[in-house]
Image: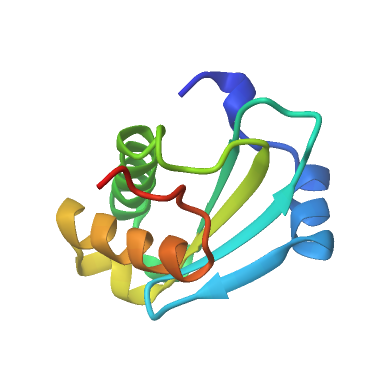
Length: 116
C-alpha cells in the first residue's frame, strides 16, 4: 500500500469521524466517507495503547493492512476508511482478523458484489 493510500494527518481522521458513517462489531469499528474525486481508497488505522504494547499494536496494524491488500479488488474505491481496533484484537491471529473485518465490511455494504 503506497503512502498516498494512507490517511496520516489528524485533520483527515477528524474529517472522516465527523462526516463519515460507522459500523462496528466486537473487534473493529469502521468509519468510512465517500470521496467521489478519488479513484482509489485510503486507509487510516487507530490502535490504542490500551490494547497492548508496541509489538502487539504494530502486529494488528500489519494484519489490517494485509487484509485490505488481499481484498483490494473487492473493496469499494473512492472512499476513505478509518479502522479502530478494539481490545479483543490483541489475541487474534491473521485469519480471525480477516474474517472479523470482512464481517463488518459486508454489514456496511463496503465490499463489491462477489463474482460467484
